[in-house]
Image (cartoon, rainbow, N blue to C red; front, top):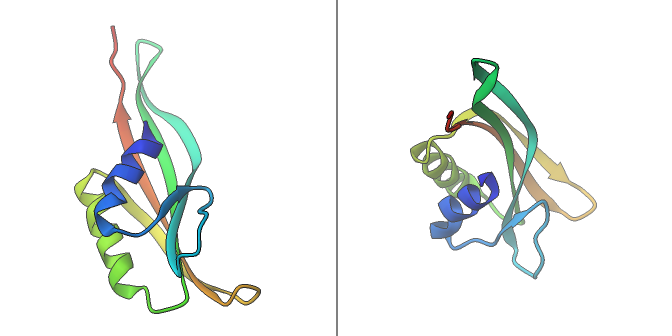
Length: 111
């Protein structure tokens, strides 16, 4: 569920998006993974809400400032909350790397 939501939400950017890895030769691409999933609220000993903690990584040889702004806007509109972010540089691949962490609260149907 969460993987499809992230991919569908970022699809309008026109940038390759992959779960954990991306294949191809694009100079700029996005990967993501869920680093934590946990029960957030319970009703009558049943999980009512699941928290999805997702990291979105932007990889690029060029300035990714506008792309990052658009990623954050799209995910926030889709119901994600931004937690934090960090700028990195991968010297072995000469790629600029931005890690952005988000939280998404999924409501569970309780019978």
